[in-house]
Image 1: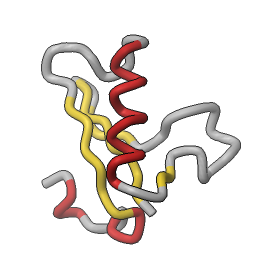
Image 2 (image 1 turned 180 degrees about the vertical axis):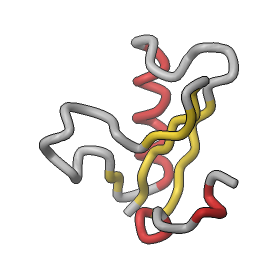
Image 3 (image 1 turned 45 degrees about the vertical axis):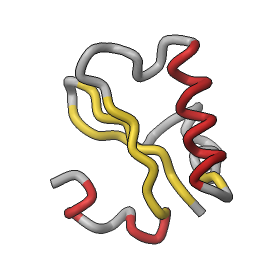
Length: 68
């Protein structure tokens, strides 16, 4: 599984959606996660200058090196 991380001027986040469904930000493939990021950009999420989307393996989310 893969998770989208978003870097904004406030820092990194993986919290997307309403926060109740913890699997809402998990995607079966890198391509599916990238497609979701593109759809979010189209509606104005993560499209500001300096914003960055990153697709990471969900199993690696506890690794500090992901955002270092």
